[in-house]
Image (cartoon, rainbow, N blue to C red; front, side, top):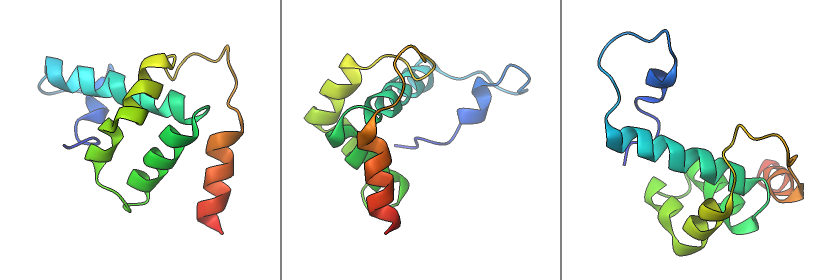
Length: 95
């Protein structure tokens, strides 16, 4: 899985080929994983482990992460501010 490649194609000024349906679905899912990571400890842990290259990107499809992503709102929704789980995990990894 190439989670980062093609992310720039989401910008309206990007030229070149359009993102495929699969790429757009993957981006939407990853947006939900990021949103879930602000509230769900399992999603936060999995996300930070992938960002830190301690786990494979496929680990973001573990059942607990998928369940959290399904429950999450899109990352652009600011009606629910981030809570402690992601911030606490960042501090844990930084130590």
